[in-house]
Length: 254
Image 1 (cartoon, helix red, strand yellow):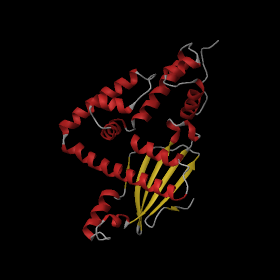
Image 2 (cartoon, rainbow, N blue to C red):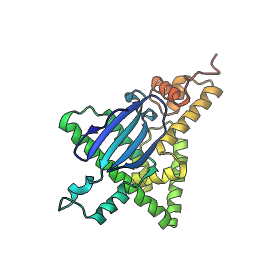
Image 3 (spheres, helix red, strand yellow):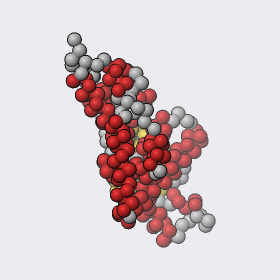
Image 4 (cartoon, rainbow, N blue to C red):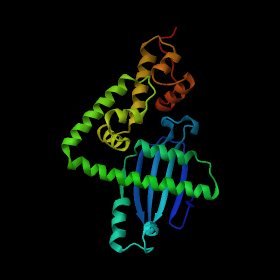
């Protein structure tokens, strides 16, 4: 296994490219004086410039990571325990679109030297924020069931719209804006209902539609690519092969 790269005295980083398929997941574990935050991210879902690779991205964080944010340079024991419970409770957690996007930025980064260290630490802090925010929103799920029902209605409406517009360029910001909801909250509710994020759901629906058109119609591959939201046939073929494990072949042609 590849060694961790030291970013500063309290933070280490590792990224490993994986050839085998993996599922979206994140986890937090503890060992001695460190916490390990691990992300498994299939970049193949919609970013084709990273070579259809899957990535495992890990951070190793020392217990005293947050001491630098204290006025006295060392957190009191009660506060240290509170930080650990907020950020480093051992558990698995879903990866929303915002987190996935930032993880892919890390995977694609070619920065070097001190610029690389600053870049990685800043993205790590954003991921910590997303992680803690997800916990707060999940508490809100059980605390306000009326709001939960209203949100699920919005998710249902968005899901229906997506299924009717698989050929469109999907903009998550516009969907959330039309529903008057933040992207983070939308993603968390969507994952709660569907068990996957919105882009995983969209990919699955597009591939299902593509498979139906390939096996049951006389349409050209170019037409099928356009109908499933792909700008060109080559991009569609790669996405289809990555999803199903084989190249698309028109069954009713000729």
